[in-house]
Image 1 (tube, helix red, strand yellow):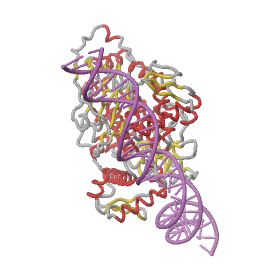
Image 2: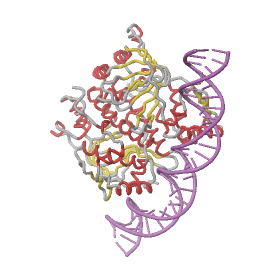
Image 3: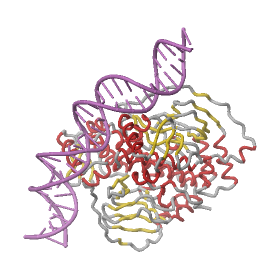
Image 4: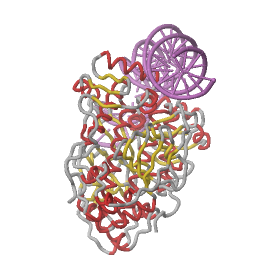
Length: 263
Length: 263
DNA sequence: CGAGAGTTTGATCCAGTTCAAGGAAAGTGG
DNA sequence: CCACTTTCCTTGAACTGGATCAAACTCTCG
């Protein structure tokens, strides 16, 4: 069963839009630019999404399922996860979010939010209001397309996660999951082939992979004893990445982004 | 193990764009209009997506994983399913598509397709080229927003499916799945609270729910003997829909669409 | 009528769960 | 700086939901 904390939010004062606005080059901008060549005015529109800087403490619930008129966030720093609770108190983690990820987009497109998001570490993010987004799209079709692309990429990850749960053994799931996390970290320039820092607990893993926390522990031990990965003390170390890729049937295709599609 | 057929495609001649273009009012248009109020020119852009009429025989693989420059389809009639194959020959069905569903959108946004789609019944659909879509978005930001909304709705279904696989028992999964299918059918005006016609086999159910076909059979028997649902001879009959909803922890929230958000 | 495609049922097995308990690390407050 | 708590990790033992193997039964349809 999940452990739930209900900490405080620290809301930073709104940051003024100075010259910084012209060169936001946050991880999201970088990500989107990899897909569509955004013009100066597109970038300006996107920069307007970054007006409201916010910080959240670890454990804070940033988005609540069932809430109306929820705003979205662009994550600049830290880790979060989106999840759903079941009536019996079980929790299913749908995805983890890191720097550059858009979070809660669905909750602005729908009237009421269909999932929750909780901060794992301390979070730095920009709050984006529904109207910012909708107006932004109206002014910049390319931005809308880029965001659609980013959303599709997220969906591809959820699909891969689905396959994981539906058809892979506990060991394969774990291997696949850690590799995906590693690959995503590398895409934003954190970590390398040898591993990455990871603030997740075994409970997070259990709730993401549809396993019990006890079994997660055993699976991690197996993988470690086979010399494949070591997850200890907040660090994932890929001891034998090729062996791991082989075990997981891992394929980075769905994460790859090889140059802009739209110019 | 899945049964795979490789039948032929019948490609109908391109349908001319007559007055029909002005009043396409296909199920997709209806669906999108429920979210954004589309102007005349938006509708025209959307109508241009319907130039290339196609038919496919049951069993035809409409979209192949790994293919490049794949086009998308708007489904007008019939059932299809999207899936992924695993190296060991296992299949995971990600979603089923019915009339009004956009299919293969991700495969045009990405360079190479990350999933396959197979026709279950005979299919009538419009083929939409990547350029149609990208140009369409450039001309009509509202259309782009509407499609993003539709894609998000699909993602919400995938997420619900994920929760299903991760945290629900076989019986709950089946109950939830059949209810969702029923609700979707009703949204496009097919079937009612008593049930709907359903061309799926127990193999389809197994590959969608991450179960063995044998167990699917047993679960269906249990549900039938409890007087909850009967799935026989191509028809799902909700014998006790309230009991079923209760068992599944089903909530239609994520499918609801209560009036346009954007005017 | 014969052949595939799909459904049904029984018997056996195992991957992962549940229950139970200790242990280590890291904060917290006196 | 030491007791005390909380969070998280680890391991053992027993159990079970769903898988697997095997076989027969029922459609349809060519």
